[in-house]
Length: 127
Image (cartoon, rainbow, N blue to C red; front, side):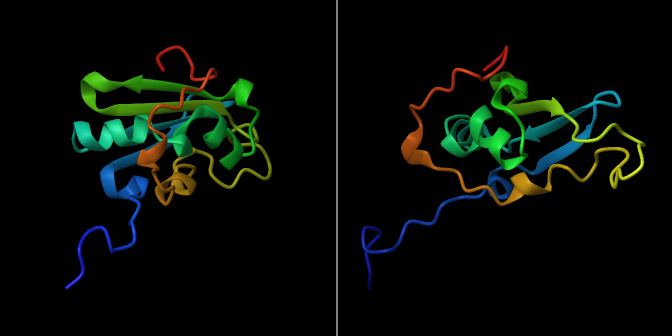
């Protein structure tokens, strides 16, 4: 029998702690991603994870960190990201006119509990 110390650490993914992850347009030039967590533990893990800092999410979406805003809403176990759309909604070449599929890259992001003290200076108004 193996002890917990002998087993490899299994990191939780965002989809494991957030039953609702959705994206939508916030006007024709902005995108917003809403993340709702099942409980305080999941929210805290995600809010303090280096993989969900504005700089990490900006890199994931090919955005400038200066354009990425993160809003932490601990009262309702939620987090929100806002960023410019890569292409204006409805323009030729827009494959997701409503912005409803843009949350997908975040679903498999691994949350790192070991980095829970990291602070990101570009966190946005509520971070």
